[in-house]
Structure formats: C-alpha cells, structure tokens
Length: 243
Length: 319
Image (cartoon, rainbow over all chains, first blue to last red; front, side):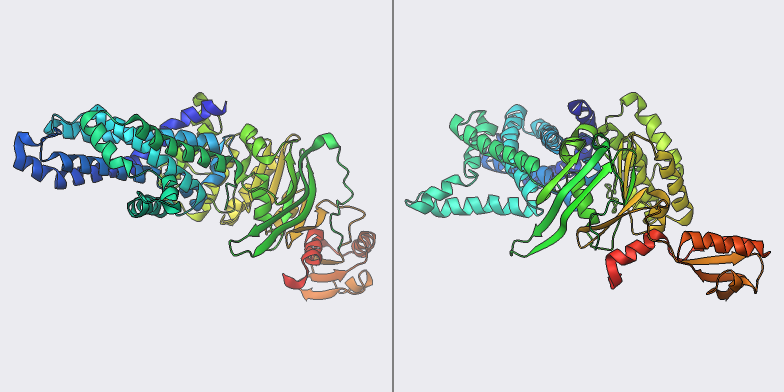
C-alpha cells in the first residue's frame, strides 16, 4: 500500500527535480562546457578528442567530471533538510507514508534525474566531440552520484546546512589527503577513513576516456557513499523528523 | 491545583484511541542547557470525542502535537494511538493534520498541492480529481485553484491547509489553531464544517487560544500550562462544575424593579444588567420571579463561561 502510493508520487518527485534542479544543472553544464571546451575545440579541430594523445583530453575530462560533481552537489543539496527547515514534512508525513521510503525513493529519482541531465549534456558534447562516449560518461555519473550523493544525503539528514557541510567535507578531505595521505603515523591512518575523493581524478580519466577503472577503487567509492546513504536512512528512521 | 482531573469521565478501555502516559519532553542544546517543554502529561482520549487543547503561548501544545504525530519522540513516558506508537500509526493509517503554520511549497499551485497530498494519502487515481474538487468547493478555493501557494492570502492558505487535512476520511483529525488567519465568515464556516465532521468513530483534537471556539466545538478541553496538564474541563453543563456566578441579563425594556428579583443587579444601561448569583438554581428562581413580575427577558449570558473561569484559575494571573 505504502509502496503503491509512493510509486505514484514518483512522477511529482521527478517533476520537482526537473523544475527545481534539472534545468539549472543543464544551464550550468552548457555554460561551463561552452566557455571552457568550445574555444579549445575550435582551436584544435579534429585533434580535440578523448584519445590519449589529444592535447585537449585533460581539459575535456576535467570539465566534464566537474560538471558531474556540481550536478550531484546541486541534486542532493537540501534533499531532506529543506523539508525540515521549511516545515513541509508536517503535511507530507501526516499522510500514511514512511519518511524512510519517501526519501530513499527521492534519492533514486534524483539519481535518474542527474543521469537524464548528463545524458542531454553528453549527447550535445558527443555531437561536437564524436569520441566522447555517452555510456562511459553516464557510468561515471552513476558512480559519483552514489559516492558523493550518499554522503550528501547523510549530511542533509543530519544537518540543516548541508550544502556548506558537504562542500567542506569534500574540500577538507582533499586537503587532508594531500597533507597527510602518504605519511606514516596516526594522521596518515586517520585520513584513510575520510571520503576517498582523491580517487575521483584518476577514475574520471579511466571511466570517461577508456570505460575502465580499478575495480577496488570503484567499489571503495561506491561502498563509502552507500554506507552513508544507509546511515542517513537509519537516522531518519530513529531520529526525530522535527527539530 | 487539581492536576489530572478527568471531570468525572470514565472511559471504557476499548474506546480509548489516544493515550498519553506520563509523557515528558526536554529539549537539550549543544551547550548543555535544557528546557522542559512537556512534563508528566497523562490523558486518555476516547473514540468519537472532540478534545480541545488550550494553553497560553509556550505551554507545550505544539510539542505535544508533534509527539502525537511522531515528529518528535518523548523524552519520558509513552504515547499510543490505537495501541501502537504514533509514527507506526501514522505510517499505517495517516492522520488528518492542520498545523499552526501552514507550510506548503510556495511554488506549487493550490490544486496540484492537493493532488499531491491526495496521492500520498493513498486516494485511488480514479478518485483523486473528484475528491480534490470536492475539498476545493467545500473550502471555497475554486477561484484560487490555479494560483501558486505563495500568491495565496493568509486566510486562503489556512483553508488550503484545512483542505489537505480533510482529503482522506481519517478517523483522527488534529487541528492546531485552525481558525488562525480566517476572517469572521470563514471562522463561522469552519465551525460548521467541524460540526459536520463529528462522528462516533472519529476523534478530533483542536488546539486553540480561542476559548470561545473550544467551548462551542469541544466536548472536553485539556488546559495545559508550563508543559503540564492543569485540568480537563467538560464544556457541557455538569452539576459538579463550579457555578458561573455572574451573568449579563438583558431585558426588552429597562425595568426598575429588577433588584426585587436580583438583589445585587448592576444597571449597565439600555436594559442591560450585571447580576450575581450563587448557583444555577438561584439563577432560575430569580429569573422566574423576574418574568413573573412582568419583565420581558431578551437574553441571559454568562459573564465568563465555565471554561474561561477554569482557564483563568489554571494558568493564573500570568495571562
């Protein structure tokens, strides 16, 4: 019964994604793509590709992977906290609906939404850079959504300031890894439990350009995000809905 | 203070729908300070009753309702609805709920907001549109159905909030300050609607500052202050209830012999008199005597209702 009515509500959740986030993601993606990629493409002509020998490849990978990170950040920003801050939860969860099921479904609907927006953007990019693989790009998007989105989801359940916190966690993890990553001692060990964001650069090149990746890295990234996603659901289940 | 007075009502255990047992809620800040919002609150609400909840600002009404809907967990004690925890009950059955602050996404349109809530409420697809139209008609929102929520006036937003609460035929309704922001016409209309909602198998809780409203709508009123239940007052006449002692008697024409029937009557002019009696029996005897002397009675109204008197006594002079 719960599943049936929630499944019917998917349409509204997807519509919210398109109106409130999807259009913004596509616009930002187009803007970044046009400003950063188009001049290079014009200058390099057919030499601009995802081939390892192409001088444009690093920029292409960097811009496209940044758009994915930005899209995920926009998608999960306020995914739970907005309803709590604005008080929308009161009417939503007076209905016979489980908040855990509602937000789990919302997470997956937004994942589909992000994949759809990336399909649009990569489709456009593919028309000007034929070697750019739409499938590889969507695979990379899915991995990043689970990894980064899972952490973002948890933060959105745990705090009202989720965008800021997620950005701080993401940036802080990179800085801490750079500072202490290879060093011996306790600090070196502690940074290992931080979100494995340092793996994203290599993975972006591997997946977007080649369609391959180190399986253990993919597993570690996705498991990290999945664990935090489940922790977020547990916090929803056992924590208060109201502040 | 006669805490936990149940006004002599004895409820069959099987008819109890909502039960609060020694419920307490303490908010703790990160700095270690704590505030007790609700303390040792116990109350049983039987099926079919309209229970009013009255109390001054900050008395704990909203916290109590948030716990009853499972949005907050009590720090101590237990709340049960039909024998299960509030969250479990709501997830299975839903509760028709109107919150004090009507929070609906301002970008949604009035009608689509109701369609969304109807979908979540589990109303079958084939009935969603007709049920939503019915509620729009009932709450007079027809000319606002296509407006965005942010474009609605406070009163219309309140009506939209009420419409979503009534979408499903829920056996439990919780209305927190339901007439807040409504104009006099819609306040009256709301009272009529609540009157129609009364059913032997439906329990309604109404939290309000408006004692007159609770006096008209509720069967009993729980008066709370400082997070505790001070007393429960029956709104119907009860022999055991303290008598109202002051009434305003209005005669069709000034009558200078009123003091022969009411010794302490005070002339307020234009045929109105303030009279003081010690019991309902004395009031009736004196009125009969007054009419017998040829006075033409227009109205008799208590200066303060039993509920108002009880409220004043329960919350003290702070209000």
